[in-house]
Length: 123
Image (cartoon, rainbow, N blue to C red; front, side, top):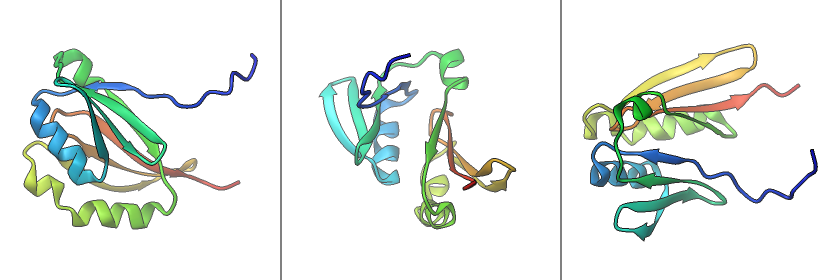
C-alpha cells in the first residue's frame, strides 16, 4: 500500500446526553470546536475526534477509543485528580493494568464509551 501522507484519523462517537458529554470532554482537557449545533470536534493538539448528538445504544455500548500517551502514570494521576467519576454520573475510572505489550487505564464517558488510555512497552 502506498503512503498517502495521512494527516489524521478522526472517529465519530455518539452521546446519550450531548451537553453532558461536551462538558465531560472539556473537563477532561479537550478543546472544543463547534461545527454544527449537534456536532463538535474535540482535540488535544493535533489529535481529536468528533462528538455528535446521536445515540444508538448498541453502537455506544460497543464503542472504544484507544489514546496513546507518554508517561502514563502522570496522565492517570492527573485524570484521577479531576474527579470526573464524582462529578459525572456513570463515569468510571479504573486503575492502571500492566500487560506484556504495555500499560493502560480505562475511563468510561457519561454515555458508556470506553476510553483506553495507554502506553506501549519500549522495545
